[in-house]
Length: 303
Image (cartoon, rainbow, N blue to C red; front, side, top):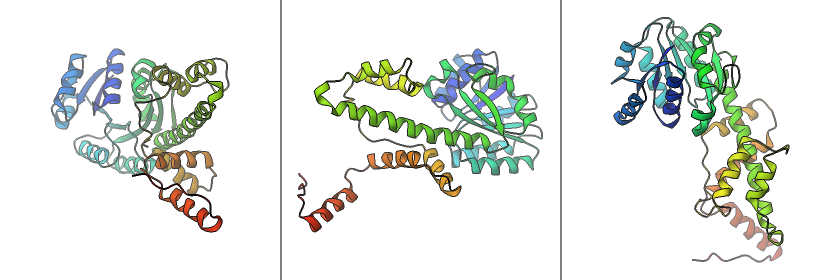
């Protein structure tokens, strides 16, 4: 099929390559000319603007947007909608908030344009392994882009699915990322405890390799953990500052709105926030309170 890819960050570029390898014709556009040139060297057709993208696509047009969530996605979709025709399809494969996707679906439906939200997981490994695709939107429109979804997924009938109406794809991806936070935190804490048991002199990389096979805790995240530990068990070149993409926060907010207890996911998010503090005011206040009521010792800050 013919499809346009807007946004050639790492994931967008890799998805373009996978589509090209699957025999699809891909029109690409990005703000950086060098990324367009690189995609062209791999067989894509470059475009100099969104107008150029629209001109090079046959109707019904299919445009896949892979730009940062928020204002960049909003602007790109609005600009595209003003140039597209009834029956065309816009796909948002980024990490948009599902509520935005519900709204965009309704707005584009009123203009006769189909909107599909695709929660996309796979990261830098997606080119080789395929992407997990959680698809929300009108069933007929999803069927029209099935060839692209089957190419991007790990296999034509595996790793992707139409999960519901507009917003559901990004909602499921949001929960996916919330679960990811909890799983990562559990691995991190477990290995931290083993590292602290100095008298056993445990080889953490060896243990990660043992667990990768036959264990009930084996997973792709454990495979990646083993890769990191193989390079440097002390992780000496890495800061203990952990970012978040926002979807973990949205998952926790949703749990609160729905009155669903999610202590593991919530605490894993809070731990990431704690990692970004140069020092904890709360911890210092705790020490001060213990000293006030019990005379417990406090460590003085070293300049």
